[in-house]
View 1 (cartoon, helix red, strand yellow):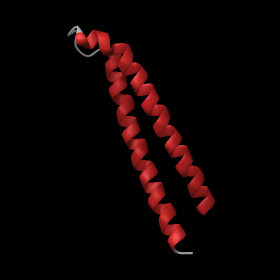
View 2 (view 1 turned 90 degrees about the vertical axis):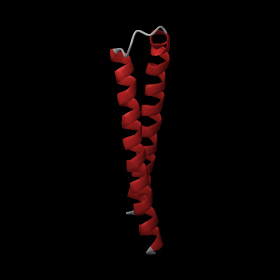
View 3 (view 1 turned 180 degrees about the horizontal axis):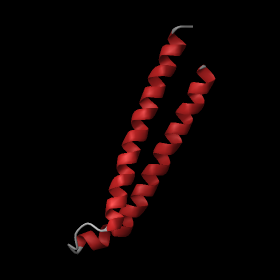
View 4 (view 1 turned 180 degrees about the vertical axis):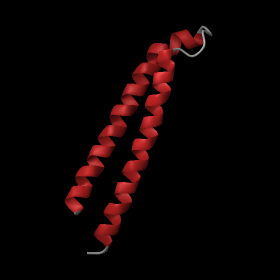
Length: 75
């Protein structure tokens, strides 16, 4: 059980990293358009969505970490 939770934790951390990098790349592509005051583009909305996914993945990683600590504490 503990090994399974560790694997899940690493998968969740990887998902956080991928979502963060993806969101940053999209954000950097749109920085010029937003600086000109053109308003939010579809890419800007995608960047926002990627950052929301990152927050969700971080929450999942925290829950897995808590479960891992609970399992480890029982042994």
